[in-house]
Amino acid sequence: MRRTLYNEDHEAFRETIRDFVAAEVAPVYDDWEHAGHPPRDFYNKLGELGVLGIQVPEEYGGAGETSFKYQAVISEECARAGVSFGGYGVHVNLVLPYLLKYASDEQKRRWLPPFATGEMMTAIAMTEPGTGSDLAGMQTTARRDGDHYVLNGAKTFITGGVLADRVLVVARTSPATPENRRAGLSILVVDTTSEGYTVGRKLEKIGLRSSDTAELAFSDVRVPVEDLLGEEGRGFEYLTHNLAEERLGIAVSSYASAAAAVEFARAYVQDRNVFGRPVASFQNTKFVLAECATEVEAARSLVDRAIEALDVGELTPADAAVAKLFCTEVQARVVDKCLQLHGGYGYILEYPIARLYTDARVTRIYGGTSEVLKTIIAKDIGV
Image 1 (tube, rainbow, N blue to C red):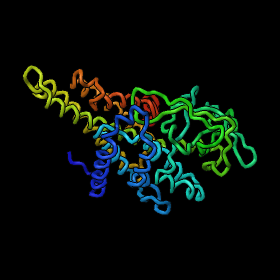
Image 2: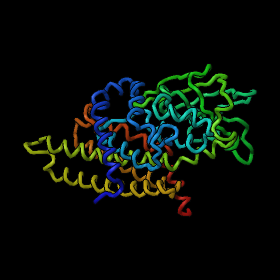
Image 3: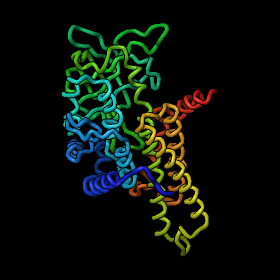
Image 4: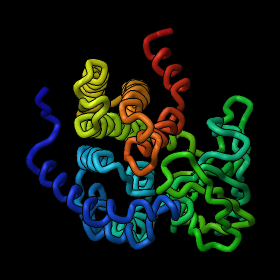
């Protein structure tokens, strides 16, 4: 079906990203996977290209674009090439919305220009070893001491945590109340060079191996009060504000991964011969690819509607939950079927389908598990 989501500007941007990936990412991507992250100067290259500052206001050195469509193009082009931009997604799609909405003018002047150039890379630290998705149960604390907070605790599963220069750390600044377990949480924008701030293990994952994921520890880290994001005690409220966009971003990348899997499989079965015939000539191959293409088309339609809704401020948390749930489940089914069409070679990492397979598993976990999303959707439909 004809796609109407993008205009000529988006397609010109797509060509720029495609050329950049071909020149700067694809030739060295295996090295990134072995290292566990891109080299630090890669983010400076993204800054020079203008990618990090697309949605940063012009007065802070960005392009001032409000549409999510450019981020969607990047997701599609990375999936098409079977690569990723490391911690870029967290930096731009997760952290930036918090800074744009809750940072003071003074904080924006300090943080947004280096954010856009890649001089200051960011991450967000919510999850703790013993709490998982139960943010209200977090144990990290930030005690006020004059003109500083004293931060103590630990975080885990922090994407971008190895290379980040500033991390949005969610901590308890006052006790929870019996009426509201979520009360008393605040967000501190912590300088990673602070004394007592420690990057622990770089966690070894089965997928997304070019994206660094770390454990963080804080031992009496002194954080200036001017680095509190928004108001004290409103952290949980702030965290829920960006969930819809975060989940849509995962839905887009999942759809793009499924679409890429179909293309990788289509190319492979046309070139590969079995029993003297191309694998593509067998009826089973045709049927499997037809099923996958149909699912991808459905996911694309849902994603496009959700992006349009986000751009006009109409994407609800339930809408985003639907998009993420459907697209991640489609991704799982399609990538698995397309790997099967590769036979034994699908299990070999030199083939991009293998990378898509291992990368896909986490999308039904992070940003809200499928089970959490089903709860949200059920509540929205009144059950």
